[in-house]
Length: 411
Image 1: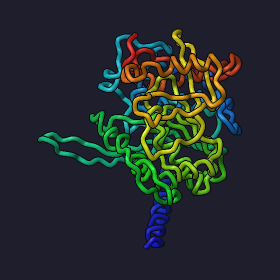
Image 2: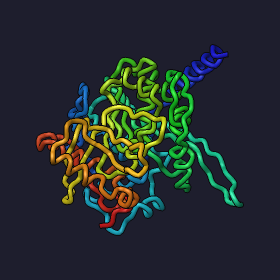
Image 3: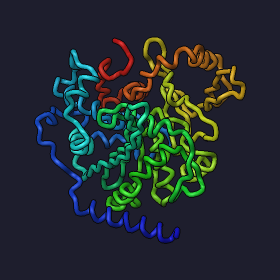
């Protein structure tokens, strides 16, 4: 029976490969909305990417943060407006206004994303492939209907030497802002993983999202000859968890995963067996980047074991950022009355103790009001501050949209 299931799976992948090969991976956005003055410093900037970095690299953190931020349609939509406004914030606009008036949507997202980033790659041959699937159920409760389910979305960028896989975080499904939260993120129970992850248990919602796009992802990688290239994987929030899950899956399937960078990823991806597999297959290759009081990376559940290296940005009262690399994991005390964390790996200095206190004092009262620190643009800003002046000269700017896309943050 297992042989039959495996054969059917391979047949499905083969059919998908043939379908992808028969299609053009490029499409045109005919609207003038997508035409904008390309900043000179962005042209060919991928040359600055450190492809062979075997640990966290600040240039790579910034560039991947820039690309994963714009995996959200409303942010990508705003970028075209911002650039056509002379790279200046647009007055009297809000995230809600963008969502009501946005031009970028699921039907044109691939070509819109390509319009925004194609010039990063200069004269290199490059292909963009948007993968998206959806499964929704409806719950009737007290006469009210609620949709919930999975809505995985990712972008593949293929060059002659490199594959970039970028995952989107939790997003609206149509007009429903809660369906993916309840149907994916909040399905915290563990389930047995299949395929290359056999023998491990992973987050229920994350696994079913990954399973929806697994065959098309593998087929696309075959079509792009990915086993002969280096593979970089990145994502924000839910996209970070999907990045870890897919990174381990692809490495277990024989793909050369170079690094996995996550931004604001939940820690609840897999059980100890999954964490052991991740460590064996991707040693020092999973970089979990966290920002100040962002509450999402603080979430914890029993039976899960954290993956990779924790990298943390601290923000002071003047919005300046300090980077602390490879620091100790937060822990949950067995004493429910002790809400405490120890964030530093090495023997702590007086300065680190002060940072520890500033990070976590009053956490129970502060965290619900600090959700805006989950915003991907904070990660972009903090990453940019770690660059040298010479590095900044050869890279894109931050394109700060403050305060228009900082959820919950007032000007």
